[in-house]
Length: 379
Ligand SMILES: *Cc1c(COP(=O)(O)O)cnc(C)c1O
Picture 1 (cartoon, rainbow, N blue to C red):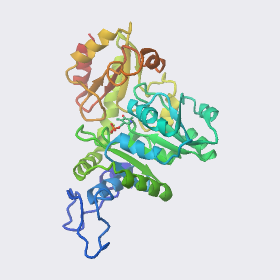
Picture 2 (spheres, rainbow, N blue to C red):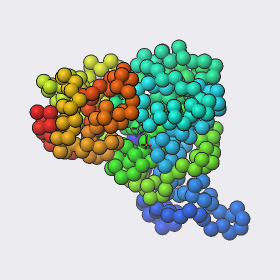
Picture 3 (cartoon, protein in one colour):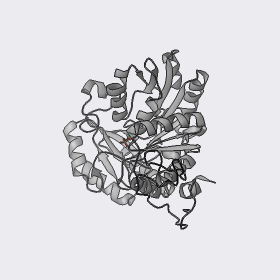
Picture 4 (cartoon, helix red, strand yellow):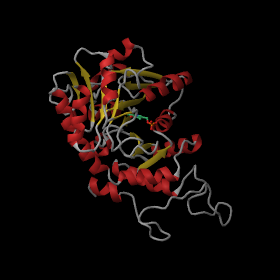
């Protein structure tokens, strides 16, 4: 099956009871047994729920994995991966990382004796400098948030493999429409389903997808034991979202390119961060591992003025000033005062999050309305 068919049919079959084409929302916590232990594979909805199973099968299919696990949020999914580790183990992670992931690693897991190295991975061979015999996991986000750095998944997987280290890739920004990390050698793909997979800004959810059964069994054990599962209603919504992922992503990419090009030609704009530009430092890697360049675009204004950036995001009308990304509607964010406000100025500026940086999640509205909106807001 090709990708555009998998999003609609992958892992799915009509429901056994009445042939409903979409799986019913099995809004139940428990299942009747004929004799103790006599059930049809479902006994309690933390362990498994048929609507969640339908979603998990779809997730496995679109990422070319064999096993999917759906969680109550993206962070719950990441939490489950780190629980594979033991005190004393080390993790090598991207330094330009989703803020919530950084907080989970440093504020929760460091105190349990897990050590995290946050490093630049623009040149993947840099990873080798940080590998010790305690390194058990490499955590990669690509493209990164909000600087749109690109990390070479294939080379990273080769390094991880040579040292017997697990490689997990946060594929939230790219989605499997653009890149499929398991095919490039990663062991675990993670998603904030909240974003592009759900696609409609109406749910919070996370996912893990793997190929290997032994790894899937360990993660399933953690999912069931720790209990951060998602409910059947949200599973249904996510499944519905995934069915249009390919058409939405195609338009996100088209509009992303138009917006990035417009900003690049604007006299008041200093830098535009988008992997589709030939001037992007890892454009060639992006071209090799991604099908297209996505709908996430960040930019700074000339003079790098904090107040001017705030004014721009306040004046936008089609773009909504809000956290999150990946929905059909265009969103704008100001990292220095929103997602990265808790990071000291000198720290955030090291990775490029300067005062005037604005991040856009370009939606699938009419391109003319998006450009006109930017025009009136930037002036
Ligand atoms: C949003 C996000 C997360 C966290 O997911 P939640 O669903 O908000 O818990 C992790 N990684 C990336 C890249 C994200 O954008």
